[in-house]
Image (cartoon, rainbow over all chains, first blue to last red; front, side):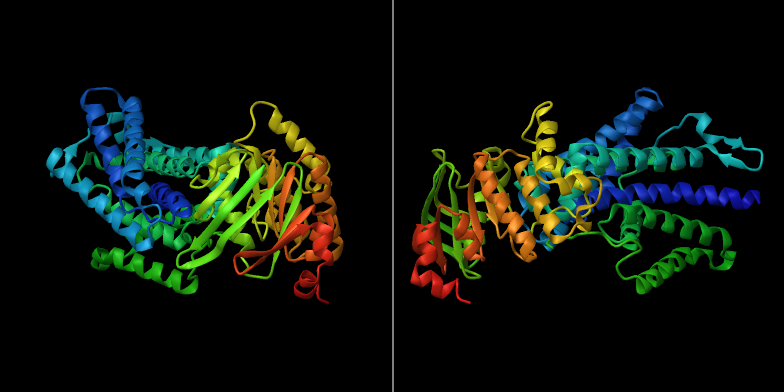
Length: 295
Length: 233
């Protein structure tokens, strides 16, 4: 029983990180029609933000804020420098731009900071576990769950109860009409990138907290998985991205926990096999995105 | 109020509007008539900044050519696009909010919204519902109300009666005539030439991106050319 609960907590916490990253991809995609493959580098920037902030002993809470700010600043910078000039480009052009930004940033990290991983010491309190009576649960997985819940709740409030959040939901349906209302396109797009930066920053903290180090390639694998999650969910839909993230997290943890040791090295093959199966059954994803362009 | 000279609107290789000259005076209802593909919608898109236009579009002595849609909206011009294009996943309340979000300070947004809900009682009933669940006529009311939330001085209406039941069409035209009483100048694009000329002060007939005929509403409705081309049946 305890093993089962521990695995459940692991699945929710891993799924939560994927959900945050997939949401970041989906928020931008729903408005700009761009899969931002440089999203992983936003995570990496946030990781380095943690590294430097903790390095000058700022304390963890402030370091987390620094990390999130770093990711937001980078998101706004790449939107302004790389994507805004490409606004009228087609899907291929945008895709290549995002690959280029991703590669450039990775090289900058490798040459400007270090190609090797840098240790990010976490407070010892995070390393322990809490006895809930029926099970011992790690502090970090619990923290992940709480942070994910707070981020999702905050995003929901933002999208529902602010004008710019409402404009973002509208822009996902019909951007031209949003502009007809006098709402500046640049502002809506910039806020979408900033939101994706916040989500990447939170995810980066949770990722680094588990691994204790940051390296130039840190964001690559989780964002690749988040891309898979976003596809499972139904690309562009925000609810779908969250659902896809949790489904992927559950699949990974379940395969890790229950596959026999002999075939455990093929875990990802099993996970992706199930993903393919899901897409065969539901080609538009679990919750297809609503893009009612014209009636 | 609005004076258009040599307006051309181009989509890629296709020149949809090939040099239009027309004017709309303060307080008028002016209608653009023409068959499908004559360039009516493109003309409105050009004025609203949605499509690249050349020539001269003077609104209160400012040239609008080259401005973005959001800038033109802030100069008190609103376009209610063809096909209504309400935000289907947003509620009626949210659609209205976005219509006026950039045009009000303090409490004047609430006052304008209250005015809209009085003018369109159906929107008050449907206030918390998703716009996608509304009927075609209700969506058209919402689309017009959303445009009015910005308190425009010039309203561009693109095919407001398209696809609506005759009873609703009556209501829409009554409403448009009523907007003039509120001091809103209207440029109306319509396929329903009879109804449009009935409420319009003046009209222009477009064929293949050019104006072929113009005149007072009643005169146009009587003219043989218009009768033959658009009022047949």
